[in-house]
Image: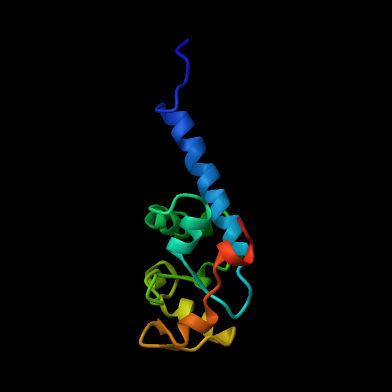
Length: 124
């Protein structure tokens, strides 16, 4: 039997599963009324250039945990770039507004004030 290496598909799938779970764990800790970014989560997890992977993880989150507050993760400019993954897309904004976050034209208002940085809040 061939030994499974880091490059083998089962090991890659396990690494992806672990990364996705790490993303979900951080996302669950974002306080109500605050938002963070895909990049901030990636940096906290030690994979600064993996913001897109964080997005992929959150896009598939509904398959694992429908209670995950994925609406609290936005792009680096505070824009609701993931809204198309909500059903309907307006749900992301509605959930944020319900938490007291102001949104205008698909962009978080006072983004700097409501930004939650996991590296600062959770520590390294």
